[in-house]
Image 1 (cartoon, rainbow, N blue to C red):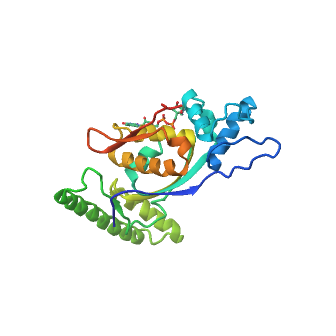
Image 2: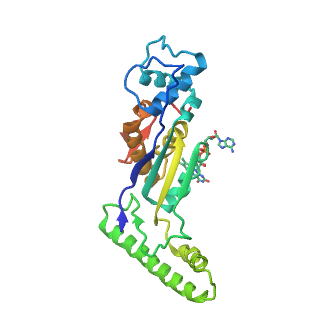
Length: 249
Ligand SMILES: Cc1cc2nc3c(=O)[nH]c(=O)nc-3n(C[C@H](O)[C@H](O)[C@H](O)COP(=O)(O)OP(=O)(O)OC[C@H]3O[C@@H](n4cnc5c(N)ncnc54)[C@H](O)[C@@H]3O)c2cc1C
């Protein structure tokens, strides 16, 4: 199986519980995560009465404008990312502050039928795609042969789970960077914004940029007040890129 684009699913979002003794004069539509950040911001100045009569969206836009990024750290969102390559996640997990990751283990999970992610630069060129597919399929055959041989070589290891791990952790060495993986990523909004600013930019690697754009679109629907300032545009390389209206806070 070949992936031509990532699959992004929202797994978890905040559930805001307003304290009865500190109600806020909310204005406009908002989600729990957005209200949580507004509540946290307003607590700093005890401005729950909303003297400036700002909607949640206006309030959070001002937070972004002022660079009060710590307020955004209260709202965490978990996404399931699938149809992405091991090389992409190798880059993704470099984002540390405010992030948590849980990724499919190639030591525990059999990759005999793993899928592969077609690099964006190859898509659309039939000859290149076929050459690339031949290579990854041949690598997968080598993996299956290696794992089988190693299971026999270590037949004396009584614990079958341990034996499989020994075989798979060695066998995976021949699998390509394009092998598909799955990862659960949790991050607060400040961290998501920083990562998306870097990875949706024109300098980012094509696959992570494509994933970043998909994550951005999902989050713009999920929590527009936090991501409305990001502009998606067609870059000089004729691929989409995105930039925030308010730089990293
Ligand atoms: C286009 C592009 C090309 C890249 N190329 C390469 C490459 O060739 N080789 C390579 O190794 N990496 C490369 N990277 C990865 C890059 O170096 C960073 O590791 C990655 O972007 C994560 O950024 P960060 O450390 O700012 O993020 P995070 O770890 O999420 O940190 C966010 C912010 O928190 C603060 N922070 C976090 N940890 C610390 C700390 N320990 N001490 C002080 N402050 C901290 C910093 O202000 C930091 O900017 C590339 C990234 C991009 C976007």
